[in-house]
Length: 299
Image (cartoon, rainbow, N blue to C red; front, side, top):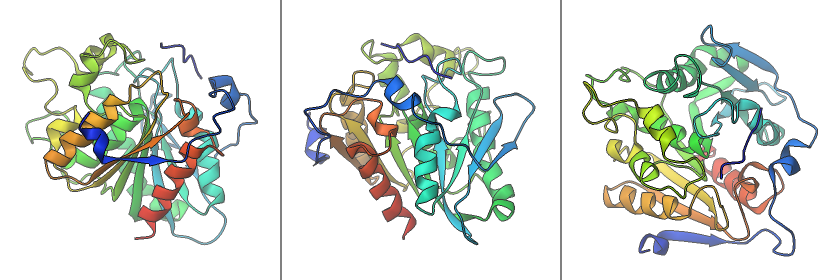
């Protein structure tokens, strides 16, 4: 389901990469969603809600397979996008011998979504990988989290949640270990997103996601990734220079913050690339993302 119509020192840390063909126009959503849609090998329920599900993509062979934990975007809003938006790149990874654990979650527009539901769902879906690893021949010791747009925030959050305070409703004792994160046009800093009307998700959705202050005077303490750093997990951000939905500074500023806190973070900027190219096979952006995924899982 899709309804995508939403609308400086750190640059020194960015890796400039080969651009998509500048003679061609930027991709629009129908350029991706109009393609024949590949299908997963299985679907796993981790709850009773229709969106508390995970699609599993398993390569041919015996395994256990290195695994990508995939998180879709859509402004944390179910009516904008669900996990099926990631089918094309999930299939591409499956063909490369990498299993994919493609999770869904209740967005802020679903009963039970927002705080803490969206975060609890994301965490529960991730941790279900461990319980299902043997059945689907997954290697839970080699897991890279890959998230697009709002899913980039959630993928980075999954890697950092070990640092959530025990007093938080989001605290869990033994979260799934993430070896590395690849964020594709992500929104990792919720405070910066809420202060940036030019981001394609708008600012109101952040308030719905983090909840009202009330007994939680600091609503970003357990929800916004910079508050949970350093987490000692390698973080790669792939961003399109022409992305009109996620301003490039969201990536540059986050990388500067993460590095200042001692984390390993790198920004990979792809020229002539918007938001769709980040999750479309056979683009320069996805080629770079795949390179990073393969390198991380080979360690």
